[in-house]
Amino acid sequence: MKTIIHTERERMEAVIAACDTCFLGMADTDGTPYVLPMNFAYLDGVVYMHSAQEGSKIDIIERNPNVCITFCSVDKIVCQNPDIACSYSMHAISVTGWGKVVYENDPDSKINVLNIFMRHYTGKTFNYAAPAVKNVKIWRVALEKITCKETGVSLSPQKNG
Image (tube, rainbow, N blue to C red; front, side, top):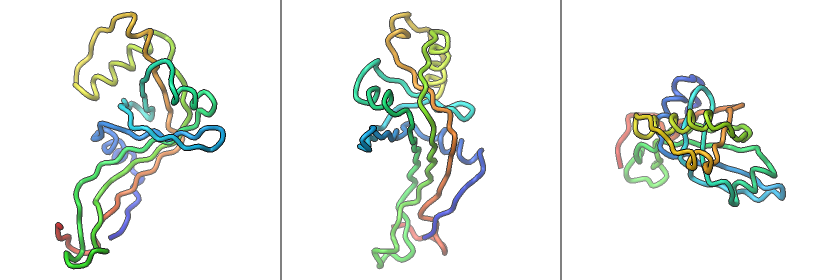
């Protein structure tokens, strides 16, 4: 099996669009890692997430706003030879991006981002009550660097395990 590096922006954005969850990686100032699955929205090189106004992840981000975000689409298990354990792998495509968290505080901007979320998950836009908009924390991460890898690519015709 081999790994292919993809550099086409359209390919990366297709992987992101196919995912329902991203994995947000943070590091506290003492180096302690913290990774969470999160809902997200994506538009024009920016990943949006949302949360409560306080909590462990907010505390960490306030101390260190640098994050790593991974999106992964796992397709299936593949193998070169069904009788050789080491020939098995997962066919998967992942996109990893790095950036800094900035919070959206303007109520109109928050509503715009919430609609990006809802279009991603439902294809619809909604109206939001003022308390809901006030109480949600909207995260904005402009991706400064982005990579895409496809793993479990067969060197010869694939046999499914």
